[in-house]
Amino acid sequence: MEILEKEKAYWKGMESYDYEIVSQLTEFPCIVASKNGVREVDEITFKKLFEQGKDYKIKILNIDHVVEKKLSSDTAVIAYEIEMETGMEGNTQRSICSCTSTWVKKNEEWKCILHTEVENQAQQ
Image 1 (cartoon, rainbow, N blue to C red):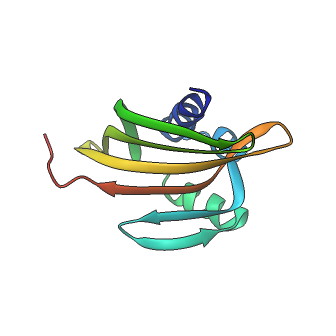
Image 2: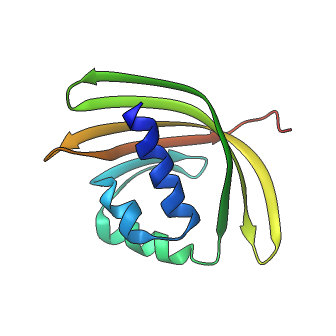
Image 3: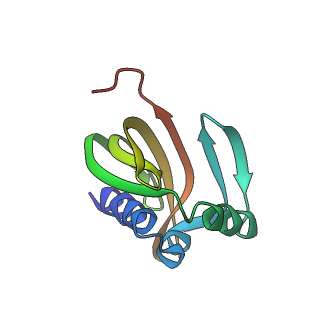
C-alpha cells in the first residue's frame, strides 16, 4: 500500500509543520475540497496558507477504513478515515474526518494532486 505510506508521510509533515515534506509530496497546482469550499492552489498560495497555520497544531491519532485503488501505473486514489486532535494554544478538539486523495506519478515520484476532507457527523 504505497499510497497509504505517502498519505502518512504527508500527515507527518503536517504534524511536524515541515513544509519541505508536504511540498515535495504535492503536485502544483493542486485541488483541495473541504468545509471551506473547493479551490485550486498554486505553490505560492499553498506556502502562504501553510505559513498562516504555524500556530495550529495537528496530532494524528489513527488512520482507519482505508480503501486504495491504483488506476494505472501513474494514477492512484485513496480514501480513509482519520482521527486527529487539532487546535491552538492548548485549546484542542478531537475529530474524525473522511478523506480522499488522488496521487499521480511524475518523474518516478508520487505526488498528491487532489485532497478532499469532510468532518464526520458522528463523533466519538
